[in-house]
Length: 252
Image 1 (cartoon, rainbow, N blue to C red):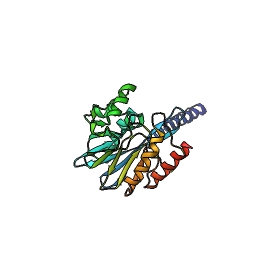
Image 2: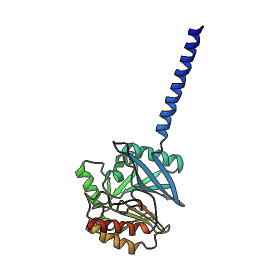
Image 3: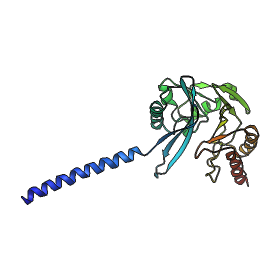
Image 4: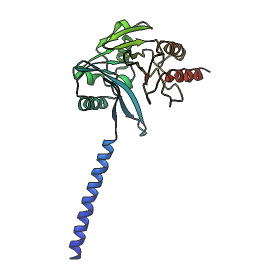
């Protein structure tokens, strides 16, 4: 009798262990790797979290813009699997197809999911230098070049967006996206969040040029109500001043 009770108790604890393990597994997989936040009517921020080998999670931002019955994506998620999950989240939450995308420079946090998008029939566009750099790096290469963006200071219409290439900064090919009707500026990695205490990675950029173009951005986008950095929390016009301060400190 005692043996039978022990067996029942053992089975019970084994089942509880399975439940707890499953719950732990479900929790670990439900950690939010992707978020979609509405910034304005027809405009959403997409944020995905890249996990470094040491376990550090780092956010990366992009935009989703409604154009009629479809969507335009600014930047992929930071990785192929996250880009697949991002498209699934867009389908689930916004329920409109992504028809085209633009990647704002050649780094993985902007363009790592290009092949995923193109495999879904989504046209991906980029600056000529972005195509050159991704080709040289052996990374996923956007199939469509916007050659009109080649010169610094160039502006090109992209649906309701205006794509602006200010010149070299965080990267040699960093492009920004401006929504004039919403006064939303996607500065990408050429703009630092207020929580940032340094300019970050400048291995592939030009800090002196970055300072110059940031001063220009402050004049050009004085009307910006929302400024989206490549990483970190969305802010306002003050992100441009903060970026200028960080670059100035780096150059001292």
